[in-house]
Length: 336
Image (cartoon, rainbow, N blue to C red; front, side, top):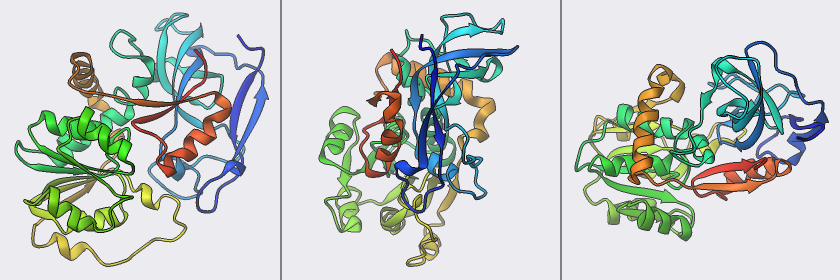
């Protein structure tokens, strides 16, 4: 056990794309748990695109971080001290902690990690928030039917990769957008996508969709926005459903991009466009956890984590999300 606690602090609100000036690594005393709390040694830390929104001093679905406060994120770790009857020393848990070597969690707000189902990093991806987002976003909002065509942007990310596989399990034809040949190969060879488009190598997204989705698009799961979404909107079929999960193409924009107006393209197909937040399904999390766990255990659902080693490299891991460094879930390994 270390004698002190390294912890990343939110140091400065960024203008546009964040850089290292937004982060400061401090060293403090190891925190002590109070009644009902757990002292947890962080093993793995999640970094996610939505965190960019928490860097803004603006109203959003996620509460903004305060400058000078510790960075926050979902962690997996080992209980070192327990002031709760619910967990014992040595238990593995997951919950919302800080970017640190050690963090204190309220025992009522954590969940157990079963390493016999999947390795602990999976509980930050397919068996965590991204997996539940994919599950409810596709099945409840997208409502896919067997034989329909599902298109996923950001398909090689933590959410998109699960969305595509669940769509295949529901008998759909699945097409993904991703940003490298390595990701395209993973989607089509390992995850079973019917086709994938490298958006960095293709300039005509509409033409590319004509080739791989000649019968149009029934469900669009959008993680990205931007010109990919503009192109997909022109291919929506009658009664198409669009699930808007993220807009990573715009997270660093200082102004609101308008571009060509796209709403007229929703009229003829009578398409439904719905935003989603996984927190709206909190009372149903157990349903998703059980089903996702069963699919992972049976091998029907493949998962992958891109692991960056060292707490000192957490900001680099976060910034790498915006250049597409990760395949699957981006995770920081803090300790063994």
